[in-house]
Image (cartoon, rainbow over all chains, first blue to last red; front, side, top):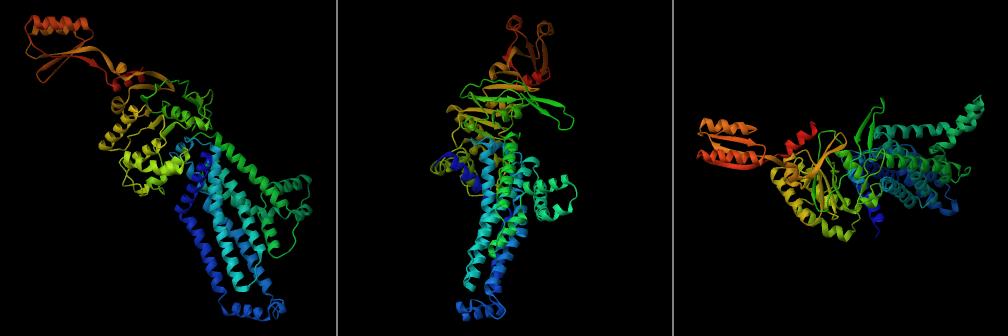
Length: 281
Length: 296
């Protein structure tokens, strides 16, 4: 095994250790377990059991359509709701939980020792970044797969498109984490990192109203500014909408939100690596 | 060279200004200096924790910015903050991995290192439960685990009790015998005097004095001790040659600046048939040397 690989594994394991030493990450997993238990519980109540039983009785012949009730639609609606929850509260909690993981490494007395080891600073920061993405990914995969399995078993409706939300949620978290990392290496402040990242999340649905704003804004420069902000900042809202559309088998307009967000994440992470490499500790 | 600039006033502080030290392999080398002299910045330049404003930091002929140049270095920082979620063994495993040891080497070396620093019973205990002295010892194990050829220790005995200090001293002496170069940055002059074979005193970012310990602390002079009851005329004669005299416990200590003068004094005492209690060459303490150097 090469030194580089050994060091990468060590950095990722260290991030996992630190994440779970912080009660906030246990809180995230606890919340996921509560959500899974909640779905187990609501599928036991009569109205749902009755609805599902009726749908099962009519089976494929009834095309899963009861009188006024479409179980497919209900399940897809539930999946959409979960995906939306992940995009708002789940993402906020993940950012909040992760915000301290970079400043903690930069604490005096800890960082000097890390940078004195025979690995590059880029390697150290990327190792921590990857570890952080993996911790949150485990939580997202656990939550989404858990709910998907429960709903699938109970309704016999297996909607693979719901699993797309795993990829999109992890992707947008990775983009936002780049902002957390940059703020962390610039200002050593978890609070500031959280504030800036959450501000980007809040800004996203506002900036997404581009076509409306193009009509409302009177000057060309203000329209240019709006477009520049929209295309350059991460599109949390657009990606959420894309995921929802994919789950509910609706069409969506191209992959622009994905690649522009990816470019934003790559640029911000590169800036964080440059700042970290040049800093004195 | 390393210059720190205030963010607002742009006032400059030259922390390190062209320090070049030649440290013989297998030596325990002490780095001394008053607070703010640039010792820690100098060490951090070697480890690439800070970057030079001008010039470059070289270690074993390699630029300190290259990660590979740090492979032969073991480092224990001052005021280290090891994450408390680690156990002693877990911490060693993490830092050994970063130093390039594979899992088989780590499995073998971690118990050996814990035993070396006297913490073999504590490997499975979280660092949050360790005392300051124990943290210092496990920190030393961390610096040693990859068998470095140069060990940089910043205040290595800070917070360690006298027994622990002796233990650390014994470990360092054994390492010196094995040919490891040890670089100690410390405020404890007595300890540096005991540990180190060579020393450099840094002041205002420059090397103010450096050399072998016994050369620097070798004093120029002799102390002659005679009984208090010597005749007054003899005492007057001795005082006229001595640079200083001091009475204590029925004795008089007379300090002479040269061998010629002390020989004349001895002849004078013996010619009066008086007894000489002691005659010893005097040495300076490292503290004397240090104070003289930084007060220049």
